[in-house]
Image (cartoon, rainbow, N blue to C red; front, side, top):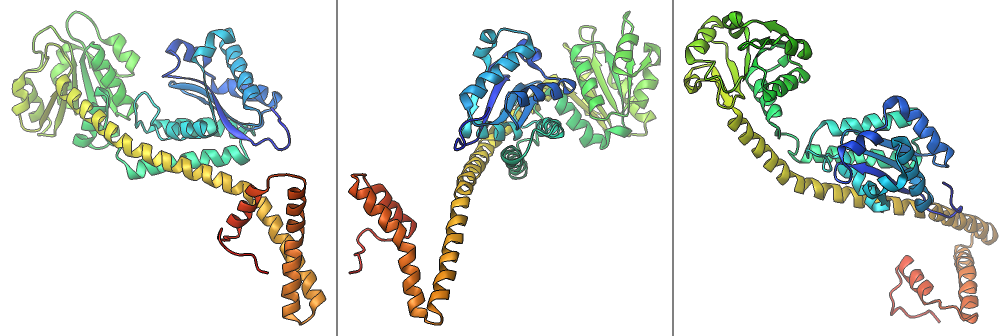
Amino acid sequence: MAGTPDTPRIPIIVGANHRTGGLTLRDRLFVEDAELPGFLEKLRDGGIDQAVVLSTCDRVETLIISENAEADGKLLSNMLAEHAGMPVAEIEPSLVLLKQMDAVRHLFRVASSLDSVVVGEPQVLGQVKACHRLARDQGMTSGDLEALMQAAYGAAKRVRNETAIGERPVSIAAVAVGISREIHGRLEDVTAVLLGHGDMGEVIASELLRAGLGALMVCDFGIRSSADLAERLGGRHVVETDLAGALANADIVITAVGGRGQILSADMVRAALKSRRSKPQFIVDTGLPRDVETAVDRLDDAFLYDLADLERLALEGRASRSFEAETAERIVAQDVDAFLRGRKERTATPALNALRTHVMALREQVLAEAGNDAERATHLLMQRLLHTPSERLRAMAQSGEDVAAKEQLIRDLFDIADDEEETP
């Protein structure tokens, strides 16, 4: 929304995130990719020409460059309420309004994954870039906003390069994926088998598939068939009578039975390893009580982890990320200061360019008048540079205006010492 010609354009952010609004509200506010062109068009109709909508599972926040933060803040609140199909008074307590430095800092922290539910998750920066790309495709990023987004990416890159914030997994499923890669390398060449229907087993299998797992088998256990689960996960259904063959083919074994005793014995794993010619096997026991005989851990080429092992590694990852986050926050603070300082310096550039052009014009005039007389040219240039400022300062003083601040500015700009005497 337009302000006066001299009104500074500042970044503002309005929206809800995982700290301010619940999942139900964020679901209502979520802007699908297909809805984004219409949403941005409404912003344009409201006088906003630069905007990015950060719409992810953690947040729905609209970043704009504004000339009237109060009016534009209300406009964004009303638009979000309309999009959610809710009264604005109902969602306003969950909305955040950030302006200028606070908005810059927030964007830099979001891009650096310091404001996420799981700090340090690498996919966050990709989500921000995707939202930015959608806005750019609609012609809603340029000038100030484009510079701000690029500065945020720079901060995120520094955080990634100068800290280990994203190196250690922090969830049980992510730990399992990490161990799988350490043992087997590329998951695209790996086969896993899921035994049972436990929730954690399904979560780990799903995470492995998202990470690129080559093939998944889902094996029956007990009277309940696993055919539906296999179909849901996109895996191959295996009946319990074919378990031995499935184990021999599995690089990763996930057990999720629980309460039925130890379904996987050391003898069964030993036989599978023999068939595999001692090719290593990663076994994840998510059963409570345990599904796998503890003696399996003593077999060569069998790598057994239970939930306690995975949780311990996840906790270590969280502690590591918390420690690294302190360094990351300092990096973000430095980059925010640098961005804002550069922005302030750029506001002085037009005046400095005008001053340089003015002085060059005076120089050309006095050189033409003085000919080859360097001393006369210097004297003329000094007189003309000082004439107008001197006259205006005298006029201000005669009118009763306090000129002390202007005098001090002159001393600061030209590095004149306070005790330096005036030349007679």
